[in-house]
Structure formats: C-alpha cells, structure tokens
Image (cartoon, rainbow, N blue to C red; front, side, top):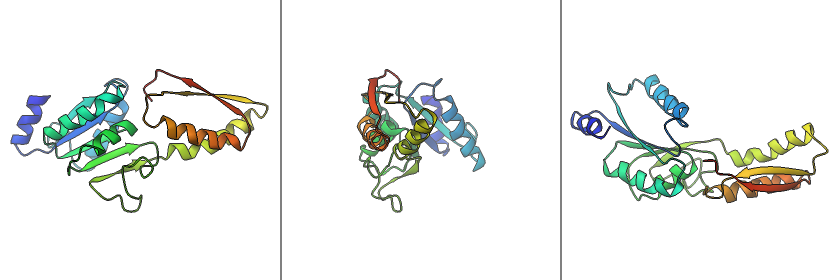
Length: 188
C-alpha cells in the first residue's frame, strides 16, 4: 500500500489515513462504511482518492505510533475510528484535520472543547454510548425484574473503561442491582 500512496501523493490524489483499532476482518464493516461515504461524495478509492490503512489489532498502546506514522506520511486527513484511535490521533500535536468516530462523550474524553464548537483540528461523530446505560438498565429491569446481580464484561486496557464503568454504576443505582464487573480479552 505504501508505494501506491506515495505515487498517489505525487499525482495529486488526496490520501486519507484510516486508523482502526481492530483487524481488517473485524473492522471490514467500518471500512465499507467509510468507502460508501466517500463514494456518496464523489470519491472512489483507487480512482480519485487513496486510503492508507493502519490496524492496531486491539492493542491500545500501538495506536499513537500508528497515528504518528500516518501523519508522517502527510495524509490529507486522518480518520480515527473508536475511542482509543481518536485519543491517539488527538495527542499527536498536529494541525492535520482529524475526523473521529467515538462511542463516548468527546468533551469528557478530552478530544474537543464542546459539541457545538469542537475547536482545534478535530471533528467527528459520537453515539454517546455511556449515556445509553440508564436506558439499557431500564429495559433489562423490565425484562428480568427479579435480577439482583448483573454481570458486565469490560476490557480493562480500554482507555474508556473507567468512564463506562462509572456510567453503568450510576444507571444501576436507580434499579438497585449489584454489578459484577468481569475482565474480557475482547477488543472493545
């Protein structure tokens, strides 16, 4: 891919850096979504845009180096998918435009100043996953009202784990179940 991206830059074709937290197989649907979004705006990979891919393989500590590599290659924009990828992109100190997709509050996570005015060189989308915890507990409580213990799988190496745990605990308090946190080796 590197020679293709280099020749694309020399021909004036914009190069997008795409930083993903998983593997090509696990993140295939995300890559497809990026390609579809580009296509809808007139950009087709290999024709008038090139994409440099970096995969962290669920290793959070690799993401800053992967982001730095994409920045070093002078991509036109860095697209960072997921909380850790976004965090890695934001600490690079670059003025390169960075577009993120994140599951939590990007203000709380330190990516942007506010949702209304992100500031700096970052913009993106969020589904505010932690905020959904209360609704998820409400539905769970309605489905199984006699539950007194609820188990939650978490990946303790995920930089977002503490925030998710806090949101889940706050939501659980309104229904009084005990939350049993279990470590998971999943990539989330």
